[in-house]
View (cartoon, rainbow, N blue to C red):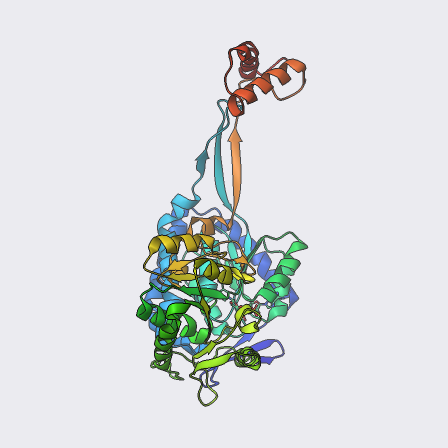
Length: 514
Ligand code: NAD
């Protein structure tokens, strides 16, 4: 794949060379940052309306180029056309439209209250850009996972240096090119730096003002450690081991179809795929038969225009998945369904698994579902929470009250009831993980503001010569403040406190003793 300082990108479908991408040297990375800082200075002064218009223009430009983009994504990743359109492009269009319409609401200065001890003061929060944001992205949804953080950072007034995955640089380059095709984007505001992990590390050493990383837990930890040397804020969107909990009162046909989609879509290379399935014991046999039937309908393809799942995008993925399956089989696990044929990936369902096995504990990132049974709600919650990960989760039952109680008990950043995955594409919901699944949230107002310095400003009109809390300190002020605190936060109002309080308040408004 690499030729010294170039990445030669080949399609997993047919080895066709899709492009050669230069890996910049240290001085080129340095100049990229200098250029980004200059462009960001210009961009930070543009109005929110103008930024909103640029987002709209970007959305329309992408929408007009969908066939070409689908073609690029399928060639670069091996996924099918519908997967590219539905799960890689559509969520980004939703997010861009969401922010383009709400940029003023989310980023305009916001009035806040002041405490009683600051009479006449006013307060507000300004959402200012941070500077240059490093976005480091993975290969599984090469468009969405690069462009979503990039446009959010840009909307907040920042410059972006994006290092796409070395596995899918062609789509990464497209993200840079399409953003740069928008008229109002200053030269240097959006730059692509291609390379491997080493280049990602150099980008961090160059001192971005924030790092937005999507990828594995292992790399996330390295990034956080490197960022700590310069106290660079990090957002980490990492792996998942999402539980799907199927109760005996669920619509089992719907749940089985959902499990097949959630576990096998994109050949399982999805951070929010169904990685553990828990089914209530009295319906387990029936449910297993249903999901086996659904798995049997999934068609592997090397032609993105037909079929349901394609090859692994990353060449190393097959071995990782096979190792986990074999480790489980070496214990007492058994294969309930095996759709692998001729060395190609296919759906695999595994039973008789337990929480000691890697296939239940570690992210698989392949089309494999381990199934376990549970007795009651408490056991389902305990099993689902017995994981180092906490990204997404799903609960299947017709009893919505029960589902909501279970949702509240799950140690995950996100949860869906009677559906799955779709919540990631809801732009109004903050998305992110707990535990090893990451730090921070994107999407929603929280996501946009996470790319800003949330600067608080408090104003005193400067009518008094001094404030009561300034020097000199004395016993009278101490007593008055104590009564004030007692009335406000403690025992409440008492007649005896009036004289002290009057003298305290008088001093307060006057500014205290000289
Ligand atoms: P990865 O961690 O191997 O690589 C991700 C990116 O980090 C790549 O661009 C890589 O070049 C770069 N990188 C590697 N080492 C680096 C270093 N030391 N410093 C800086 N950058 C470095 O992940 P991957 O294999 O590309 O992606 C798959 C992983 O991503 C899975 O674990 C998946 O669950 C996760 N993921 C998470 C989400 C989410 O939203 N939480 C979404 C998609 C994928």
